[in-house]
Amino acid sequence: MSAGGVTQGGPQVVLPEPAVDADRRTGARLSGRASRAKRRLSNPWASGIAIVLGVLWTIPTIGLFITSFRPEAEIRRSGWWTVFGNMFSGEEQFSLENYQTALYGSSTNLAEYFVNSIVITLPSVLIPITVALLAAYAFAWIDFPGRNWLFVAVFALQIVPIQVTMIPLLSAYVDAGIAGSFWTVWLSHSIFALPLAIFLLHNFMKDIPSSLVEAARVDGAGHVTIFFRVVMPLLVPAIAAFGIFQFLWVWNDLLVALVFAGGTPDVAPLTVRVAEMSGSRGGDWHILSAGAFISIVVPLVVFVALQRYFVRGLLAGSVKG
Image (cartoon, rainbow, N blue to C red):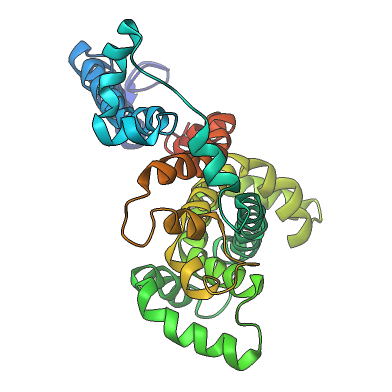
């Protein structure tokens, strides 16, 4: 056999190979794109720009951290960047008074709101992920009438503004007798997160080779077995990525918590209390800096601890082969 055909006896019969040529051209294009992308990403200018953007993005957090340890008089007298010069002259002072005031300086204990945020965030992450996994599997691997239209409808729900749905939801919660409870916040966050969760997880499931699912069906596996033993292990990066997104969104949310739980101190999360720390005229922002930094500790730890899963989830499905 030659590169372009088959030799049988004397004369050579040349057989066209359009599929092989197309694969070769596709492979060459993909290799060219990969090499160009690699050169761009490894460019010193690109690396320098990324470092500058990273530093600029971190500066507000550094300023918040330094401000939270400065006395009120120093905060009002000069900016946080003057700390670096005053440290060498011995004029700068640091104190934990802001944190003591933020944690114990009012009639309400900030630790209670901290626990409320944890109680709100964990179910608000687990509920939409559980429902979205089942729905995404149905859209990806179960053929039923109207599947495509229903998926388009779910995808279109992402464009509905949250503010439009708050009054109808609040009225429904009042009629059901669950207003002012954790259930209202759990259900609201789950409802708002489901369209995006279903869309993302469905796209990851469609990247799973159909041969794996078909092989499991040939072996006699049903949908439950395929879901838990074939699909789920491959979706761990995607689940972790969306879980981090949802965790950060729910933990830092103020609007939903203020509407559905803001009037109930036993249910209100940490963000509601932090918003109140600025005072009625916005003059207590030295306390606000300490409270704000307390509120970002948990999402910061979660993101750093699960960063590798987050990156794997973002890259999953982007490369085949």
